[in-house]
Structures are given as C-alpha cells and as structure tokens.
Amino acid sequence: MIKAYRFLIFLILALFLLLGSRESRYQKANFLSSTIYLPFISSVNWLNSYLRLQNENLALHNQLTGCQIELNNLHQELDFYRKQNIDFTAPRYDFVTADVIGSNGEFGQRYYILDQGREAGIKPTMPVLGTEGVIGKVVTAGHNYSLLMPIDHTDFKLGVMLQKNFTHGLLEADLEGRIYMNMMRLGSEVSLGDTIVTSHFSKTFPPFYPVGTVSRIKIAADRLNMSAEIEPFSKLQSMTTVIVLLYENHDEYGKELGIQDEAEN
Image 1 (cartoon, rainbow, N blue to C red):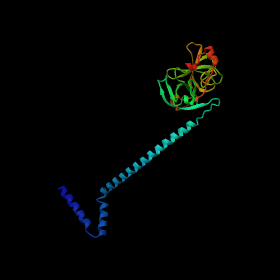
Image 2 (cartoon, rainbow, N blue to C red):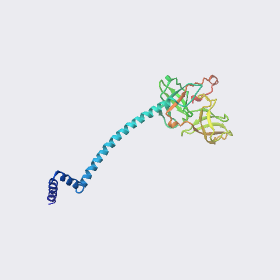
Image 3 (cartoon, rainbow, N blue to C red):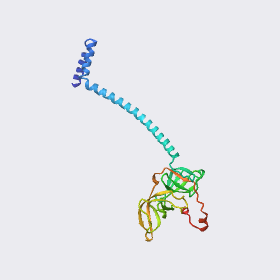
Image 4 (cartoon, rainbow, N blue to C red):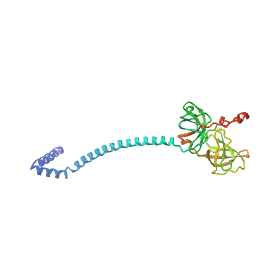
C-alpha cells in the first residue's frame, strides 16, 4: 500500500514537471530542488564535496611525501658537510675523521667500530677524540676498519691531571660506566667543576687534551688517596663521528725500564 502511494506521488510530480512551457518547467524544477528534493540534493552535493576533498588530500599527501624525501636528502647532505668541517684543531698532529658504524659488547665492556683503518694510517693505541674532548683509543686496526675502546670501558686507563694545578691521577671506569680520576693523594687541591685534561704521563694521548669536569669527590678506602668522579665532555652514547689522531708515543726509556704502558691495559 505504501509503495502504491509512493508511486502515485512520483507520478504526480513527473506530470507536474512535464506540463507547461520549457521556462515553466525550469521554474518548477528549481522550486522542487529548493523544497522537496533539498535533502537529497544536499546529500549528493556533500558526497561530491567529500570525494573531491579526498582526492585533494591524497594529492597533498603525495606532495608532502615528496617534500619529506627531499628534506631527508638535504639533512644527509648537510650532515656530510658537517663531518668534513669538524671544529677541532690539532696543529702538531695529523688526524683522520671516522664514522662510528657499530658497537659490540655489554655496557662497561663495549667497543665501537669505526669505518677507517690501516689504509687511512690508523694504528693500535692511537688516541680518539670528539669535537668536545677525549673519547678513547684504538685497540685494533684492520685494513678499512678499527676498534675503539671508549673511556668508560673498564679496561681503559689514562694518565690525567687537573688543569689548574697539574695534580696527576689515573682515569678509570667501573662496570656501570662511571668515570673516575683515582690515585690522588689525600688533601689534594681539587674542587667540584675542576677541568680534567690528559697529562704528561699519558702514553696514549698528548698532554692537555680535555677530558671532563669533576662532579663528585670521595676518599678512597685506604684513607690515603682521593678519587674524583668525572663528567666527560664527550657524549659517548650519541657519538657519530670521531677524530683519530695519527699520534704514536715512542717512549724508549719506558721499554728499557720495564714500565707498563697504559695502552697495554
């Protein structure tokens, strides 16, 4: 019954639209589109607008993807040029820049792999630095790779001193990666914030290369010595490019006297 009424209504509307002149039919069609057919026409227009916006959104997404790829390429190019202009001067020694391409070992026993080796002039025991300070030393050198032992490795030893008064000590690290300047005589003039640099006693580094600052001071268990915890200048966990000094210490008297080289530890 309802279907019959619908059919009758549509038939009357069709006849209503067909009767009269062309101009009157246009007027009647405009009247119906703004009254009875308005919800239907609005829905159709909304669907058309939605589909058009979807197409525009897809086009903008593709354009954004292209811009993102271009931005990534520019970032890589910028990073390349930054690596070629590292702000570090070593007037007495030649140096090689190398990228850190991997790591091996647990925390406190970790080594880092560099993408330069003997072909670039790198040899074991050569010092490694960042733009801010000491990072470690080379322990193995292959043809086109080398292995870096960082200063927070438990086997790393380094002769260091206070920059302000040349008080000497030995840099060592514990299993948790904390770095200390040990073997300072009790009563040594050391304060929080003091700068630590490599010392003349180092067999790996030339003297006066920056290491870090004193963050905590404590008395050793023997009550004869002091140790200072050091906050290193170089951020070892985020390093990407390092500097290998082509420096070798030819200390003949140490060999003759049987003095152990820190580089052998």
